[in-house]
Image (cartoon, rainbow, N blue to C red; front, side):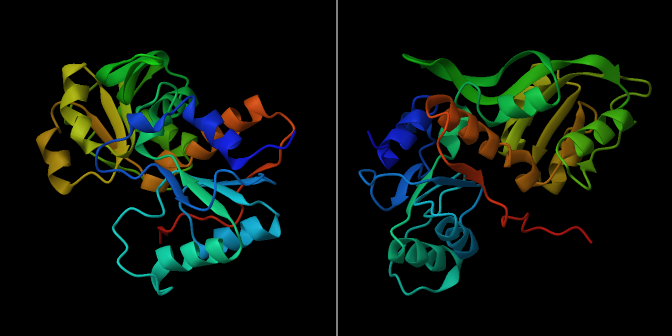
Length: 269
């Protein structure tokens, strides 16, 4: 019995159904057909024409991405710009694209849970609970957990950089939260998660890991916690590991690849 694109998508949506996405998002099918037989899956954070070409070379006709290819309204299709180049290339080559964005952010075991696991945090819980899903239980944004061994702020920043392969980290002043204070309780949110800073403080986090924080965040919360801001890509590239696990758990011998051509679009000079 052949495996369809729908079968692969269902394996993902059992863990992160589309109903979990935020109202502004466009989780789901971006182009192509769920009914087509799936010959292979390529995983990425963002879809580009180069990644579509990689899928074609690998004979994969399904791309699973974290960020939606189609996020803003498209008023015409003329092949101009990154989105339309990738879209047209995919359509011409009968490649289906599916994106699982804030659905996997909000799902139990999603992005922030994967980040917490990489840091080996203990007693991990959801930072901001939205509600109880009838099938999945408690869902929400971000996570908070406890380090096995408390670290100084500087030691903690070095651990974060190493864990998430981030060459740099923008941080608030380690001394501002109190000289000699150790980092024990750690909160985090993959992607642009500054909106959860208040929740991190309420939950008595010593440090908060996220990305894309504005300048004023480092001032406003300096006395409350250590804000560690890594790259957006670095915080969310674990989405590929999540998708890989979900697919291969259901289809152990199926052809699933992590993109090798994908690179962080931000370069640190």
